[in-house]
Image 1: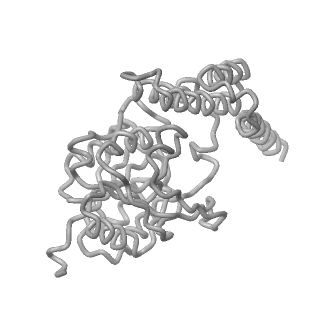
Image 2 (image 1 turned 120 degrees about the vertical axis):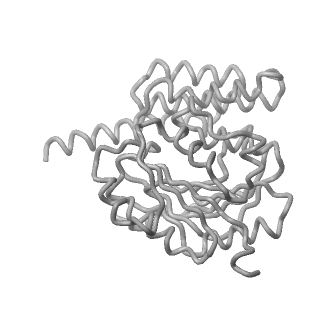
Length: 306
């Protein structure tokens, strides 16, 4: 297909105080072999050297600076002005393989009924060293809504109609706006996994995936699933889903040092699904939360003693 007839892809990168990782993210976008990309970087009021990094990309990357409004509002702002037929986002500490967008666009073109495509990805540390690999699960909506497994990860693309019909990210959420967005998108048809490693997800000290969380962020998954099942809260699928949500909240409370709340939500999970009380995997999730808490505390104390 001639380059000027290839579908336009819009990618938005919201960034806030991640200057040390941002250049690598921008370079990975500039290295894409797909010729028709609209790329926008939105600096969400960074107080570090992010503007200096972006200045170095003048003429190669379109970027804007704004007062801080949060990741969800920033993404929605970027997508609101997007011209692309296909849309996506790239966090400012993650990377895409050079053939990522071309491969994912090909999948969308070959499967016109699929609203979302996603890929496998590597895990990297703060220095960009590979620390692991994630083979994403094949799409399974039951698994998504009952076990709360977020199948799309970094690199996912979706059709414009997803944004138009399902809406953008929920701006009241801080921890799981991506998962809640994919939940709504799942009503539009089955997603497609592209079994290729096309992205890198960075896990470092500032990653929200490993930080203790405030109470309200730990409870986002519970409130999200209550809203999702508000019309049929007693359905067997709803009970399994809400049990899983409370179990995730329990682990998050444990990791954040809120022992009483961790126990409370563990028991709430058991009320929705009694076998939680005798499930080794359920107890393992709770105990792993306490383990992460101890690990982070030990790391903090070690740093203070050095």
